[in-house]
Length: 206
Image (tube, rainbow, N blue to C red):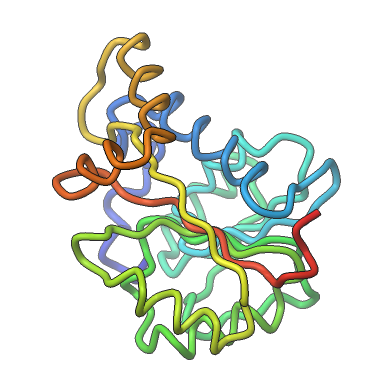
């Protein structure tokens, strides 16, 4: 996130940014842990543009560190008891490598996407997970940038969790089921929702 823009929204960000934050973030957390190389207990996760760090509640048993460019978001995260530091995703580097890096609703803040991917690849040991709107970005171009950065494996998973509208849980479960529906999922992605993407190196599948 860019510093300043989100400062006034920092209070209870995770609760107000999603119509049903619990369901939305829980599903995201499940996929972050399971897609591509799995993350077990004790894995280190770096969450770029993390807001108030509320996503950490849905990544059980990992060592979570967040980074955000908004001082007020960092303050709100620290009040939650989350390890979040001030930094910009374009130039931040952790003091030591991490098992996984995540970046949600923020990939468009990369000033130079290819350079951003190279930086992330330099400190990420197992996988990089992020979301991507296929109506805004070319999947093939993103895949090419990741490959140049050293991520030679790339997987996509449709992510059908409503962000702005709360819907009954049975309907949410039905949407999650559609994520594996192949051509039907691609039709839905043409008008709504996004992909969850995981990039990793070929020797890191297990």
